[in-house]
Image (tube, rainbow, N blue to C red; front, top):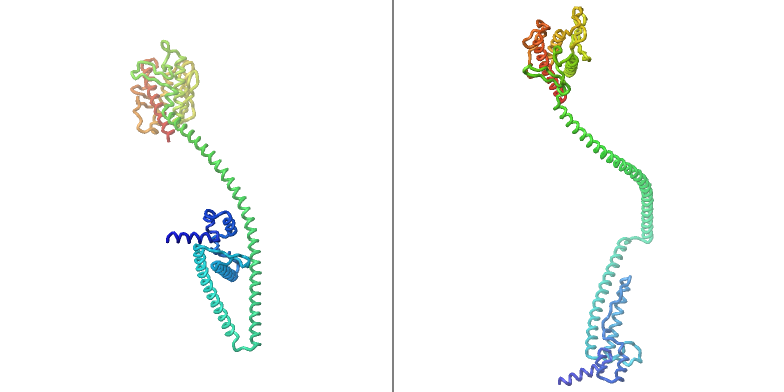
Amino acid sequence: MKDEGRKVSRASQLGCTCGHSQRLVRTMVDDNFSATAGQHASLDASFVHLTRPPPRESSNDSNHEGLLETLRHSSQLLRVAQGNAITQHLSDPGVSLCQDCIDRVAQALESDTERLKMESLAYERAFIAEEERQKMLRNAVESNVAGTSDSSKDDILVRAATAFNDEIKVLKAACEQHENELHYLKSLQKQQMVLSQQLELKEDGIWEEQNALELEAKALDNIIAQLGTHCLRAQKDLESLSMVKLHPTLFDLVVDKRGLRYPLINELRLAFRPKGDVEWKEINAAWSQAAQLILFIGASVDFRSRQWRVVPLTPVAKLIFISPDGKRAVYSLGSGHETSSPDGSRAKRAPEMSMSLRALNCLLDEMIRHISSLVENSPKLPYDISRHRIGTYDLSRLDESDDSSWSQVIHSVASNLQWLSDRASEYTLEATVI
């Protein structure tokens, strides 16, 4: 039975002219049968698959043509299933189908039937909706014109047309107003564009000025940095100068505390009269340096005497005393000049150093009292001094020939002068720091 079923199936395939089993035909029949089957080889089994038509612009036409196309395909499938030709030409010998092709044709017919049902339902729904819409329109028209005559209907139409015309005029006026507003807005836009260009130019100028200011700021920063460097250097120099005692530096005054050696000022010996290798030339130069130191100290501490003037001339320095009645007395700190007394009489042409030292002692007394009022907590004065005394010596009673006593007086004067120099340096440093 199995062999007979295989034979029937093979026979049906051999008799099929649909082209589904052309490969099997070529292997089992001769060349003549292959040539006869090749005449129908152009038929493919896929003809039972219906393609959906492309969409159209109108939905009604698209649905109508799709329905016609489906019906046309269905009729072709029915003819094929009956063994007729696909086309309607009478000369076509017909088509013989195998079992597989018949099953596929049946499936295609079922799908087309379902599609036709769905499209029929769609047409019915569309028809019912159109009827409802037409009915609603008729009811609306009848309700508007019910109970009116033909002339009333015409009046209604005229009023409707007039209303439509009025509305058109209103819309036209609104359009014109909008056009005017549009022109106004365009003019405003042009003005805004001009203002925008002006603002862009100003902005460019501002950016250029900002760049220039930034460059100037950088230059100013460099200048400030340089000034800061100079200020630091100046401050360091000031600190260095504050550590320097100017008076002792310019006038190096050396005094032996025991009083066994001559006091030295800038390596020049201060003496009462020549002795040994000490000559008047060195003595005059030393006392001239002492007079310059006194003048420098007075200028540093702002000392101004009403009665005394210092003239640090070379080779002999001078002290000038101005009495209240305007008379002047000149005292030479050295030799070779006459010394006049306050009463106007002339002394001998001899080194009147004793009178000059008494005058110098009076001047130092005034300066010490002045600087003591300026410098607080100053060290003790080496030798007490008054107008006519220094230390233990009364200058008014010393004889000019007492060289030993006058040498001690010069030592005391040099010590007090050194004290004045140190105090003046301290006062100058404090004033500089402040």
